[in-house]
Length: 274
Image (spheres, one colour):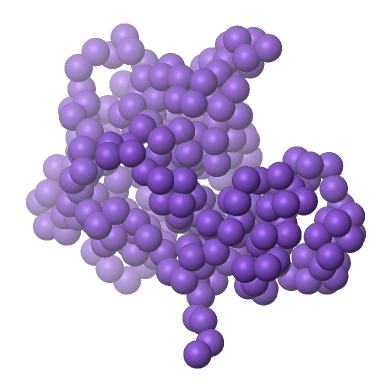
């Protein structure tokens, strides 16, 4: 029986392969020669057009020195895996035309880099196996592909200063994560607002919130806590959440001042990592 895989996960697999190949300083031709694969096959895998075989994955791991990552990555191509409480929100996220998020202590998932997301997963309890971590990472990075479209969804990100200051994964990982947010903000792909510590208590301080609007569906709210999450579509709840979001947004720094602060914190992390 033929294996029906998830196209989005296959694309994520290809992006990870390209990233690891470039980090190793290899061209597609050089990788193909060392892994005994055709250059065309490597190109198709990186573009997400072809599913690697187990033998392909073993060769890639051996040449790139990735410790079995690409072998462990293969099962994730058979379907998307997210926390049960996030399943409904994950589907809505892919359909949304507008997303407004608030990150209390973490950078929101669709903005996370490889290193940052992995560091988050490694804090889970009970601990995740390497395979489980790789599967979760593929899904997390796959979600960010909604930003590949230059216009939709429109994304506003409200970040508590704690999300910038908490060194998830260490200084280098944080520097790379904040530079990623900066790149998206500088290009105007997302709008970023930082809520400074000096604001004190505020209406969203109890957890992560995401508001989503759609072309042909009513808006929803997704609120998340420790191992819990709930989607709300009741109009009164959505309006209350939007009002709370707007109140906090009014206390936050402007887009440009927020980018300046993020840049400054990123530079601090870069200096610490050296």
